[in-house]
Image (cartoon, rainbow, N blue to C red; front, top):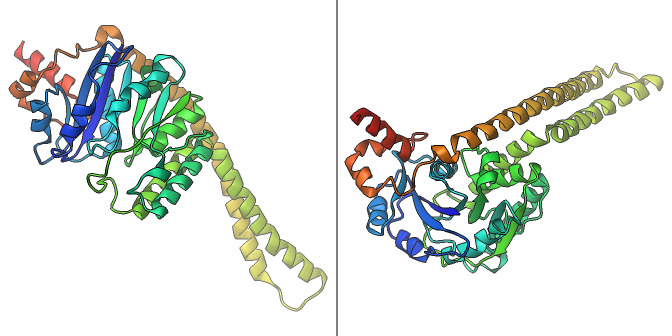
Amino acid sequence: MRLFVQVPCLNEEATLPLVLESIPKEIPGIDEIHVLIIDDGSSDRTVEVARELGVEHFVFHTRNMGLARSFRDGVDYALQHGADIVVNTDGDNQYPQDRIADLVQPILTNDADIVIGDRQTKTIAHFSPFKKIMQTIGSKVVNFAAETDLPDAASGFRAYSREALYRLNVVTEFSYCMETIIQAGHKRMRIASVPVTTNPKTRESRLFKNIFEHMGRSGGAIMRSYIMFKPHVVFLGLAALFSLGAAIPFVRFLVLSILNVAGDHIQSLIFGAAMLTGALLSLALIVISDMLRTNRTLVEDQLERSKAWQYAPERQVDPNAVTLDDAVRHPSMMVSPPTSLTRAVRQNDDQAS
């Protein structure tokens, strides 16, 4: 059983040592533990610090690509190197890496496909009362959209089984956290939670400027993911709303006409016609979105099969084959995604031969 702990980093030279020293070296049921650093365009000594501390697995972004892209590229690298479980933590040492053994336990016992570290946000001292309330509301919204019951849907401290990663497809550019839960919920994956405590705050978040930006971008990601899986609920609701908006002026026009009230009341007909057009368009969107959902289901089924073929054991890379010496000898490894460290090494070896 091979575990990869991936750590997305953007200028984390100060906190990365704290993260790496707290990652367990041995876990019952796990044969190999590998640490993967995703350098998201750092301009400080993050990579050098990681190398000095013995990290041998890297994915490099030549510029900042964001958390979602870092997650996707890290997963791609880990699966190429035979990961059976992938744990995602943060480079700012927010999460308790010493609890990784507890995080992967439900996957090892085959009780879950995804495990999320519940930060117990109501107990976090450096969270303001407003942020605690928003975190609670956000989790409720995600649970509604995903049909799940998770206490901390926004937590990024997670463990994924290989099979779960085959079925998940991150398309957002902001954060993978909400999207993967909604996908997993609608794909009927087993999701478990493990209560954890967070470490003291080391810096402000670089993912967003303030809580309101986070709320707006997270809300957009949730809505997009929800529409992907339940478009009929959204567009049927809009159709009903527009139909009601059309019925009111039409009924008003009819009543006034029966009562022979002075005036032609043409404005009621115009407004009603506009609302009726909106209702018809919403009904048309239901048909179109349902066809797109069917097509997406078929495409995702083929993509899952492609991943199983791509990451098959005979095509995996030995985790110990890509070393720091390789990275030093081959500067072209500093590439933008989707080209990974492994692919860069392979290209250089092909050119040499």
